[in-house]
Length: 364
Image (cartoon, rainbow, N blue to C red; front, side, top):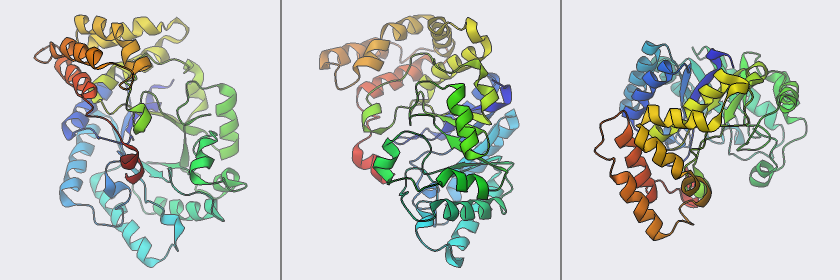
């Protein structure tokens, strides 16, 4: 995995990270050898369903500050902009005016990577690819970003997307590949929306269908949504061969709603790509957990992986939850690294703070 290809996209549903956590990530990503951060929380309506409304001044100022913090460390800053269902109506002067306003704001903020996201929207439309390509190309011509990444409505070969958003139009990928500006890359999640592994055959065939190498939107360890929010995805990453950098134009990891806990898994990505065939997942987890927290908590986290990843909130008994809260509550005043913050995230998760309901999932 080439060093300049791996980064993080805050692209989940539910409770987004705080501005302090994002600023902290700028330093963390640089120190650990990641190259970019993309701001794309589904909970920011001004990136999604309120895209026609002016970007609030306070939000623009916060994004500009975050952009500066990332760039000052050498980490590229990006946004994931999702103009919700823009292609369902005529791409007229009024729509273009709203779109230009948002592009102008991103140009002022300073955006290196511009994600244009049309995922999780209606898809069974005549000439879907042509409509989307026209809009994306219009944006590209007016943005100062260095890289553009388009997320198509069908961003995986997973059949669940057609169940949710309608049948994929015939020739969708081929037409997109032919009509999109060659500067534009594609986001892709793999054979499934949340793929457990990636193969050379799949990624090469995807590149052939899209007419360019994909940028992987890796949905591990993300834990959003009504089902996944009941788990903490903390096991070390597997199923990502070191060679996959040769098959990709980039690799964006979508983390958990829990920013501090996500660092543990992110460090196992780096270990896996650095060590290749010598990678030992369990050993990488212990090392990463101790780096982020402390040795004592690392042992406890490893002990509790089955409770966090296999049982989850719906299976854990009230007694088990209270016992775990007491165990991690003992670390809430710890001063080593991020031990207290990790403890708070575990206790809050056990208390239901991060639960994402179906209604919230559909409205964001």
